Image (cartoon, rainbow, N blue to C red):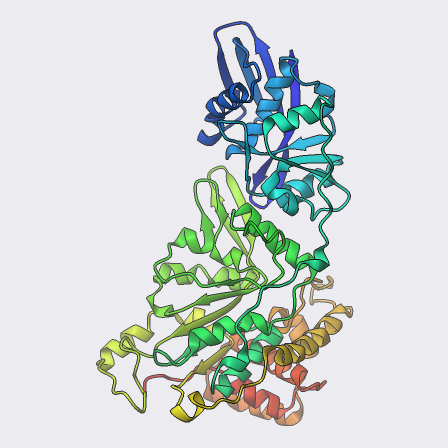
Length: 517
């Protein structure tokens, strides 16, 4: 007897419907699984057999053939345990096959028949709704995540006997209640008011947040670079529902979604250690999975001790910074992951950290300082809009009981500037080739050259200042456009339509300065 159960495979961040076909034939007892399964899927034979026996069902003493179609799609992970077990029960007449029509099933089985957590439930549920499935059976631990998809009946399954009893109409399971996305709140973050001093750095980070610009902070150890970076997500605009679902999908596929948080409403903040591998940062593996830059999508990627990262690891950031996506190629094919992050990096001016410090003497030679700073390539530095020095904080400011400006107040100014940008980019704009510009552009840092030409208009004093800066600072064409984008953001914070010399002068102050004098 042939039985068919529908499940889903995750390829990158997208799902593919998989038909789990189970057929019983004559021969020695054995389960053959075909359809390009990986080792974890092949091991389902033992888990399914033990789960069926320990759940007081009859495991057939005949040959079983399990086909995972389409055979051209690679199947990985233990999520096929539950659909394979249901297929065996349906093929042997222990549950009615028609009850599995228009339903999608995922879940890992323990040896006693309990259903365990499965990664990637959110994109699986989204695909089920898109493909017209009426209901989906998922592990109880993942039901809240699947319930984020509207107009889809989600059933939280605790064990194989429970689901079998429901399919045989012995018990009635009620669908899991749909999640109220608006009721899910963001997690608290570091507040700017708790950071003493560093007013000019806070201003630079506000400008960066308002326009989506990248930042490099340089200063001695203990000056507050890491604390300032951790406070940045608190001043970024609140995520829209579409952004939250986009980020949650990545974390679900990467199996890093907290069990008590079905939807991520806070901007991600990722701070990988400088010993991270190339694959850990950009993504990879035999079958690629998202890396840190994709986990920082719509949020902040913080690279502390920037020169300590390997040069090869840093250089791979150049393409994602420009294109906002990362493409990973393997022999089986290529996968593209989103990587629209805001880079915030921090570094010491020298190996000991005190070069140029007015209080503590530097113990490094000039050669050591030069070699340390040359670890970061010029092309990568050219892609960072804001370079800011973070000096040590004196005792008077540290001991002052007065609080600084709260993050919520700064966020309001940032959201006002972002709203100006969104309204500006909604207007029709045509590129040089006559094609409409990318509608996904939402902030100044993402502007195309055509948009820079249209929206970054300088007054006469600004043109003269820019001409002088191009000559003295030896700005590249990329740096020229980045300065204009930064000046546009500063003008937006000031609610100005035209970029004047004051806005441009502040933008030029954020260009990199020679650390070795």
